[in-house]
Image 1: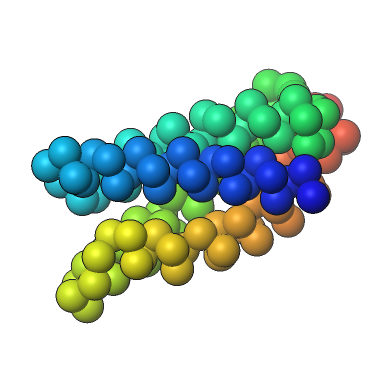
Image 2: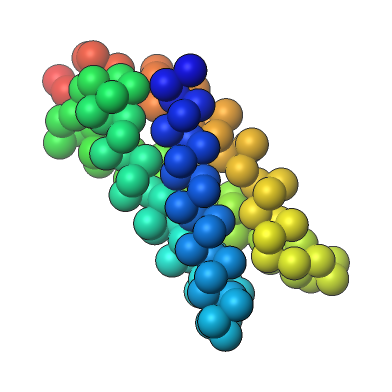
Length: 118
């Protein structure tokens, strides 16, 4: 449940900032990237301190790798949505559950695993 709360808060920050930047006239893919970065920073802090209660240099490096993979997945889905005549928001909403599932599984079993600090 705590993972879900952190994810919802991160997603709200991510999507909210993205939408504000797009409304403000920023290019859509740049707005997606900046929203993603803001959500990433909040998400790591939340999960390292509250959800998994395990922060280490190794965990942070692994988290960056996980976020990189999730970023590429997100950008591919948003670009596909834009290419099909949709919006960045539509692509982002499709990507969010995939990124969340990937983040939870790899976060629990690889990034924040207690033996990950070794």
